[in-house]
Image 1 (cartoon, rainbow, N blue to C red):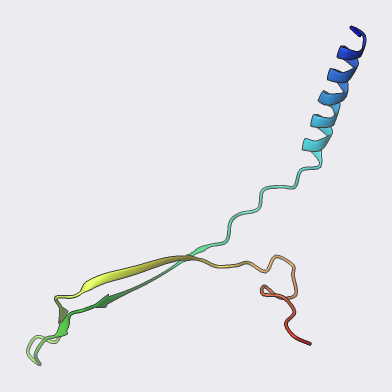
Image 2: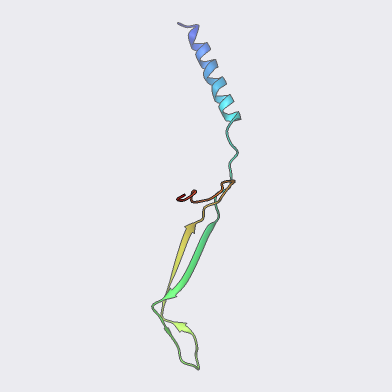
Length: 78
């Protein structure tokens, strides 16, 4: 029984090292996108033509990357 423990640990270490050699390189994440607008306010007069009194809404979203595929969203109906 004692002879099997070093062999099993050697096998486990070998498998871990070989698995890390085949690991894919870390690719950068897709770039973040943002959009912003002001809502709920009013336009001023002709003398002061500016938008005031509103609140800003900002949306932060992810964008898919193609990365070698033919289409980002699949092939669609044929």
